[in-house]
Length: 368
Image (cartoon, rainbow, N blue to C red):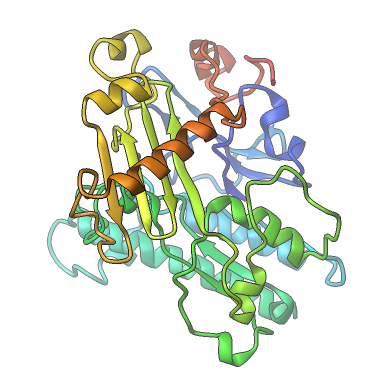
């Protein structure tokens, strides 16, 4: 239920062909919270974006999306046969742009005057909180709550400057402010001594897949996996199994590689990302495209995140031995053949909704 944003140019990339039994939501990065219109910043892409399974739907026309998606999630819960396990992925678009929310939520923070952007954002968070409460209430009323693991998380840091202070950076970067996000896990059957605590263990987004499979009782051996089963760390206080992670290795527009090993983090290349619609030919002359060029341009950053989680002191020229170890690891990863290139369709003009009756639609590329 909610935002997909994992590809839609071919039907095989859409939710009901990627393992989900049902789908209600939108395909793109973002849409109007009331009208379901998706568009890009240049204005050339604009179309209606809401589906029920694979059919266009106008259900909930004019309804605020946090309320609509929570209502649809409640319907899934109430219609579910309690003894059968269920995985519900509920991806709210809140508080992604556009900044929209019913006034009643924002007025809690600014009773008078023209509403500020900050008050609207706070209102969006409050509307999101209410939506989560509605889903939780439905779980309790359906007598499913005690057997439900709720995982609440975000996909990246905030997009606005200083939004992630004191962490450095923002969305679309490999700084901690762009890549670290708050999360919590709630499970009523978790032993009391492990509730209400926080953990400093490393956890990467790819760890959720094996962790959720383990929760579901999947017992077959998983091979060629990037993730770790982290359930015993979360629910029983075991030491976390992860000691290192890859933030990103990207050669699509300009070179960026970032990894963490223990307390050390190395950024090799450009910490800030480029917009995905920047033509490659415009970047070749302006930016370093390879390991060697990035190194010769002194685009190297080393941080001790245990002592300096806000990435204020670059130790690249003080800890040469650590640098060599981490740089060697990046080279080894890049030569391993396991770095997956982005599966981005180049002929994106074919996907313009104007060719599909004004509706965001699959059917303009071939799935790999």
